[in-house]
Amino acid sequence: MPWPPVGSCPISPSLLDLDPVAGMRRIAGRPLDAFERMDLDFHRRVREGYLEIARDGQAPCARASTRRPMPDRLHAQIARGVDEALGRREPRHGA
Image 1 (cartoon, rainbow, N blue to C red):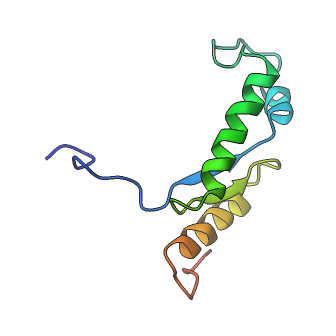
Image 2: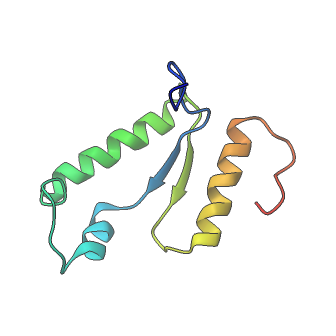
């Protein structure tokens, strides 16, 4: 059986949100790929497009800020968003 199964889609996608200026600061000083070399306006438009998808409500989407990279807090934000999207009343253990 192929993985993932044909026709499947994520139950609750997660949007890891980061302001493009902060993202560009994080990658400064290393070789950039073609996508990373695009101008700041391009990255702002891409971010806004993803935020619009998350806002429009057509698909549940857990949004988590990656402004301050703290893995435990980021995991908790994503887990809460997934729980909310799935309509869970009680958060899972560790979230």
